[in-house]
Length: 116
Image (cartoon, rainbow, N blue to C red; front, top):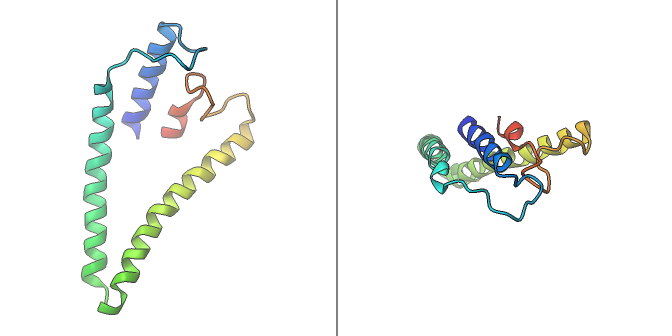
């Protein structure tokens, strides 16, 4: 997430230097290769975490609970996504409309705060 936040700061800097902040329809001239570190860290983290957690559930659970354990595994993922949405909603209610993390125009938002 830190790598994604740093790359988002780089994207905002490029958008500001090219004068694209006020026009969200223009494309920021940034190479797609800037996404490689984020996808590498997220992909390797998910591979190690998910495989280990799923292996633990399938190896340690009794035979009658194997399907329940994989359901619990999926529930932990969905709970994380739900918590993320609740966090953004709470922050938007507290800070108001002046300093949104996820604005309609991402060039004016502060997505890097959400990523940190």
